[in-house]
Image 1 (cartoon, rainbow, N blue to C red):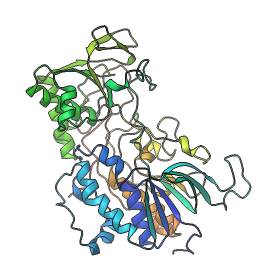
Image 2 (image 1 turned 180 degrees about the vertical axis):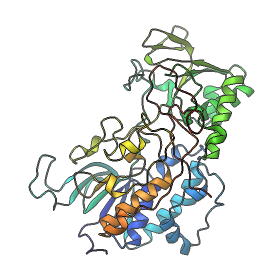
Image 3 (image 1 turned 90 degrees about the vertical axis):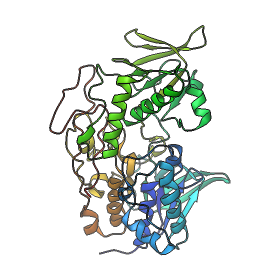
Image 4 (image 1 turned 90 degrees about the horizontal axis):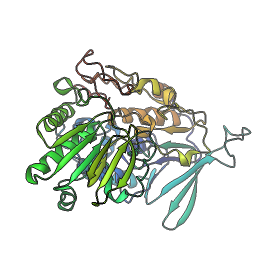
Length: 448
């Protein structure tokens, strides 16, 4: 049963898909809630990759409680079997949801509010006395100046988009990476944009990374090269081979992802792509011709590079949580109880177990990482998983512990096997359901 409502509002960091879903669940339970979004609009981070089409169909991208809130507004759910782009997701779902939440008495959605610190009220991380009873202080930067809010609980659904992993092969920026930042792009460039196409057309482009983002990039650059034959690509792969880098193909229950892997494999086989294996970038330096030279730790080099595209994943920003007591896995930076369920070093051919507040709870009660940020550096997150996370978290905050402990989501296995734990050795082929995946372990969608 729900207990007495908290004295202070729930603060949710991030107005993306998971943050807004958390707000919808909080509204459904009558909790006063403040959503703080650093960007200018709902789904601001999603809009930055708005040209990319999602692997999941609309049926997997709308939270059920959020849909219930939207229904009276005249909102019409998009065709369930169609696949939106990030821009579609933001325009057709996240923006209307933020508007519907703002129109309620319980939820206050604030844009241009960047959270820069969270702590127990009047206590740093070292203080035990009265800690469990103290509310949270949330420090916020706004255009009007700094702001402090008091919160009964905090859900950090800020994601990982703002912190791309660097080009350097050891997890640190390569020497010269910052100096040549104007020639390096992090993420999937929008090659439907005329100015972006001009940036890469006819150029020698180095692409670093082996996940789905790298596949998207290789396919797009191959298409560009068909119109501009001078375009060529050096695909920098840290592993000794690429045979396991294209996912599950026809065996993948995320059909759109399987199709992408097959397209990327075809692009590499017949397109303007040169594969450079066992390449871990150590240095980026300028050449006399005005091009770049990428040098690996073993001394090998790729020369004459005009542009570099880095698609090596993202990592959580924990810098503003320094005064919160967190218990995170030392490898993934995910909650310690969640890490074994999602770790690509050991996860093979299994589904992510349904999980909620019991797995996500931190030593500081009432503080939770949710959504992509809860997965740390693991690449296996799905929106459906995040919706179930925040349903359970909000139920716990509201005092409905029975509902919080009752995890309801079922996610079947994908056709993707293997992990990213191997270093230079070639991955073992096969497994229970198809070829192994290099850095991609996204778990499949709910069956139709």
